[in-house]
Length: 298
Ligand code: HMG
Ligand code: MG
Image (tube, rainbow, N blue to C red):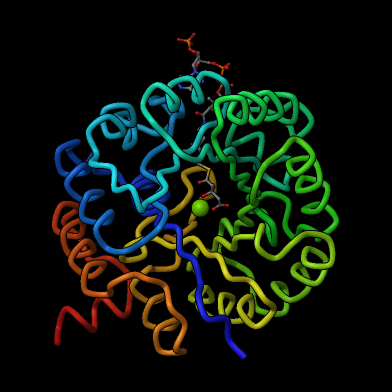
């Protein structure tokens, strides 16, 4: 028995673009995000309020946030690493603040320049301030299956981080297969621990498709009761602090799967296809989505 509805967060403008070498002109980004806003998707992560020196492709977060046309049916989120990022995000306009850290101490250090223990007090403050500003907060936990530096990560390590973030007040947690190594048995093992502890509605799965396992892992997650996923148009993306990490599972492929199973998403596939072709053209390279490649030649 499949769920009637699955919720998709479009992360292409953030996770997708953050790993591209090409700087997409702000006008083009705004136009592209506006296209996504009209696709029926309910949440869009539009940029990152991180240090522009570390993530140059998203250096225009504030301008993008100020200029995109807000669809009242869409929730707009952005990545915020610390209070400075939150301040910029609040000035610019967000509905959801996405804080982030890793279950692996080494990846956390490389990504945000702090150990896990040093990160907790920073995120605690960010979460409390975001809540005071009446914003929802999503917590990303990266490297929940494998870390490029530490290898296998246990469900207990992931639960330690999730417990802290929920305790600080995050509304939902997105569990990231940052380097796209997991196979369905790993997903089953993690979800057995996670779903015996937290409400299924608060858990989002975030798969990268480095080894082509993302759709299989997504299917396994659905069979275990997960109904919220992150994906990116055309399969754009990666993590600049995880060498070799490929893009997110492609929204196009996800929609092909979900709609084929009879699961509603509210998203129009042709609108996502148009948005994928638009950004593919701006990047000057083919995106990895299989459904897109097929649609484009038919
Ligand atoms: P830091 O150097 O430790 O920060 O960086 P700091 O507090 O020591 O400050 C150093 C300088 O940065 C100061 O400027 C600050 O003002 C400035 P200076 O005085 O030298 O001129 N600064 C900022 N500027 C703008 N915006 C800010 C900000 N904060 C400080 N928010 C920091 C710490 C976290 C900022 C840095 O390491 C950083 O920006 N890292 C980027 C990490 C990142 O974006 N990674 C990719 C996203 S995570 C991901 O992709 C995984 C995910 O998709 C899930 C999955 O797949 O697993 C979410
Ligand atoms: Mg990611």
